[in-house]
Length: 291
Length: 261
Image 1: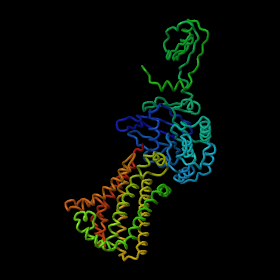
Image 2 (image 1 turned 120 degrees about the vertical axis):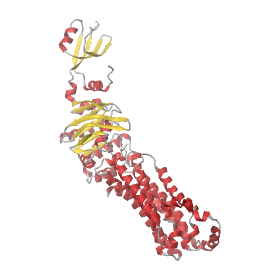
Image 3 (image 1 turned 90 degrees about the horizontal axis):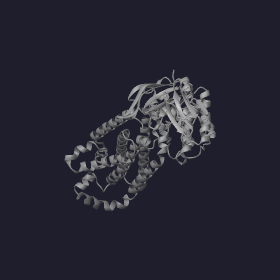
Image 4 (image 1 turned 90 degrees about the vertical axis):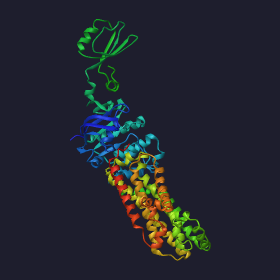
């Protein structure tokens, strides 16, 4: 059984595309990053999985439960954090958390207290008096206090300061090590590269790639930087060529031996051939291809 | 139950204020009656000369010189109109407000089905209407005892029941409509409440518009008919019940499938 499994999931708002033919598979126990620019369809996918909106076509299941028929079961085993956290004005953090737990038929006071302490959230404050970041923390505790099997987090770190982001990811890692699945959307590439085991990139409503983060890094493409005063010969497979003073920098895909023998014909002072970093790989998917 | 209590708690200030205001105003009406009683006979004559205006407010069928007649009119204005506005505000905001305040996403991702959530919210609307009407009835009856007026208890209770049902109908209809709305909706609610009130007044003016009585619950809460006949006008009440049922059904079906923005 997969944690999340979608098949050609499509959602149109009238004639406006939300997502088209999204097929995504997240294993249990995974730490999955879902990345894409604003408006790519991240939230639409997540909100469809949670039954907030119904798909136009396609199917999907969460922890083996159908997203249309078994909404309640899904909600029971998922901890969801929306991208915008809105709560009932005038209620205290403590009351919101208690309400949240009661709606699940649970008592989560102990866990809520622990989480609030770790996130430095004052439970006696009223939610509408909180800053954006602190409201985000309330949202985190709501999603985490009942120890769900699956965490679906929509841009969870936006608005959190770096220290809190680290604490938050520490908690997620602990939960993940204890067997829970984490699925988070983000447009911060570095955090996905740092924490996630797998990732998928969505753009214009469709999945471009979905793989282990490690494999995503080994694309066969090399980042080459060269210090030379001579002009570069014409080599097939070079992309993203930038020359600044004596520093030449490009991406190369193709036979590495062919590259070396071509480069052998010019003189250079220094050379560096590395795997492009993940951020660069993601950027490559993000950017619209011009050709 | 959690959501039901949560709803009532969230609305408690508004419930208390509406209840206090309506209860207070009706009690004042009762307390000033002994003073006005003498002038009432003159007023009855004056009203009788006002033709269709008298009919519009249903005063042609009531004897202003008696406490019940006087109370029927006052009750119609204060509890009828006030209660209708309260009920329409409650009903219209029950579902739509969650989406306007963006709390719908929070609420609906808990393991409670939409049908269940809709039901709890509807029950909380009905419960609040009940609480308001109970307070009004108790305080009014106590006030009547205090001023020592003669009343026909059955007629009085029928009157209160009619206004309660009127508010249930308006609350339910606006609740059903609220399932179809997304943002600000208070205007729609108040509009419906007021419209129902005026539709009844207009339908009282001329016989050719009497069919309008079928769409407004104010028709079966007409104090004149209830006091003179000690009964409800069932035909209007049944149509009202049907309107209420249809609105609620549509509301439940719509909300169960609605895309939450």
